[in-house]
Image (cartoon, rainbow, N blue to C red; front, side, top):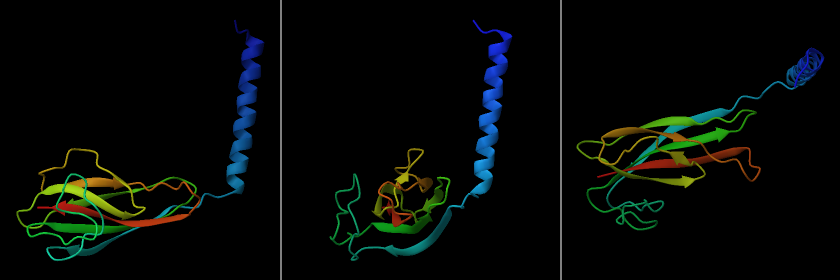
Length: 146
């Protein structure tokens, strides 16, 4: 059971440690995370696929992209700061094409927050992992449209 003296001692310790943390944070200013997103040229029939597309047997690394498919891509470059950050990207298929899957090259990992198959457009998040010590990650996220 807590008594008033124990409660005051605990509150004092919390105040003391939070003040120390604020002083340490003031000494080392946080470096911002830099995120750059740029479009890349679409890949179409006759071009070589840069990677395998999950769930789409017709799109395999190094093989030519068959008729009816188009890969719409965006390059993501993230330079890690003191806070973790990512980017949300909007993908839209051209013409009457619909989303089938996504594929990535490099270390541009992504997460799709909703079901996107057979949709005309969607948003996906790119949140690359920084395990392994590298301060910069980059890659291309492609939407597979058919």
